Picture 1 (cartoon, rainbow, N blue to C red):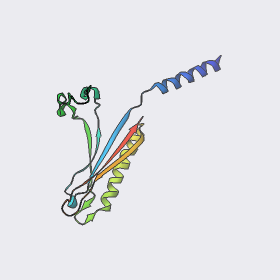
Picture 2: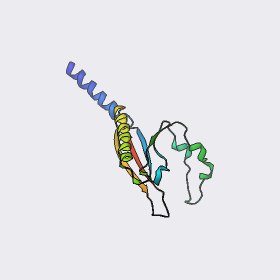
Picture 3: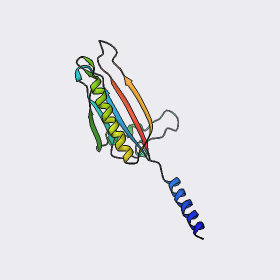
Picture 4: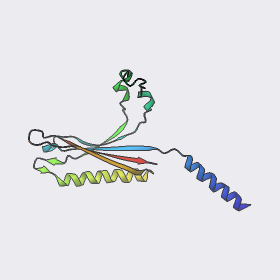
Length: 148
């Protein structure tokens, strides 16, 4: 009888765990590659949820859109973390100490998220790089996507 009760309890706990909804969280780093430290580099994590249905419209004919009814200012959230990072470039070029310092900051955030029960699921990165002497601007963006 005890074995049946134990087995039933384990099955119920397993079923409850499987029915639990997966949550996702995104942490984004934006690292400037503007020379002389003129850019702004940050790590951003939102602290507020949005309902995408409030900002989504439907197209039924492929042409007509009601997207004009969605106001950009309504999408913006006010509650987020902003952690300062260092720029990749200093006055003399790539600053490897800044790169290592940013790596330490990102590692600390990854460890913080793991301690809170989040698992790193995906990482995606993109860059808009310096196009030469006439450009002088660029950013390196990385998104860390967590789930639990």
